[in-house]
Image (cartoon, rainbow over all chains, first blue to last red; front, side, top):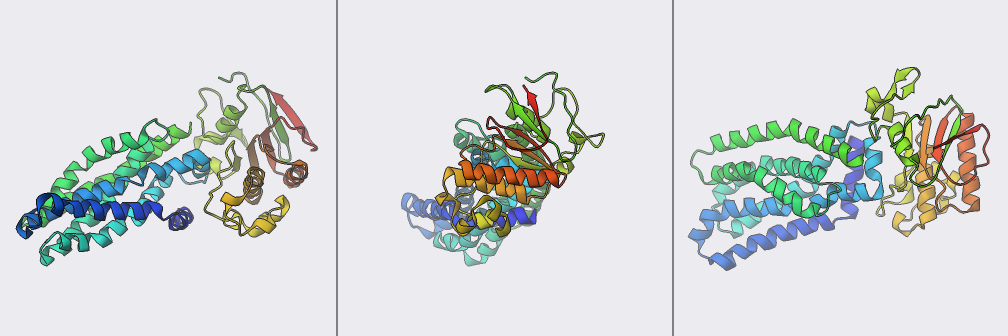
Length: 214
Length: 171
């Protein structure tokens, strides 16, 4: 699995367009809100956490259709399934790759965007704390959706339709944790969702990969 | 749908699958690899059900499908060890991104990956597609070397291969 992750990381670095596109989308989408709502600090500060969460969610969807799509088209998926790793192991490796190349960079640039949106500086660490499990959940559920829609026509359209509804609970608790005076409960909920998705999403994605390869 | 297919292969054996387009050569190869589940029947390895534990079965198989599984952004040397490029005549292209290789060169790179795998059973689906005469000779030499080392090959190909110990299964 380590070999697979390192190889995929090398490919992502050579093919940095996916990560760059996600980050640019994240920044541009976040920047649009002050234009639409006005630059009033009170208004923006009240909804900054929600904006950052929604923008991160949408930005993380962008590279998902190529996560397995390229491997499916060039025959690499067969080799991955014959690598000796179980299919869920291949899916988990892809989830790790998605988080390292999309989730982690989004997490790193979330703080400047939040400050630009007038979020109180004291709340920024809490935002990042919610985005840590949040982006991981996104990678798990997004990869599951990418595997399910692999080979389907209009997969890029189907993928958000599967992923976004599944992410709604995380979005609710993630954004609420930042604005709530008692964020612990929402953080525990996010952690619980991550714990549930961690074994289930790779298993589901692995089964979907095997079905796609047939 | 393939029915009534039965064969056995011993160490050092080569089986060539022949048949018209759509006869099921690729389907059979994929089933042997465990990529397509068998609706009925059994694949045995040393007398035991080989497909019972797919990850273990995969460790015996070097796979070459219709597609080369070559990544355009990686160099030839990043796909296979440098030493594996010489037998397919790609040493001079070791540091070239694979996107710059011709279709035949990509096929040779895919063959090099199979040869470098060290796995006992090669499953090759139309391995000679796009190969010129010199490359065909190199490919035959690799197959012969694998066979002499006790390896097994099952290949679907329309190209006559100048190899020893080849048996043919017509579908």
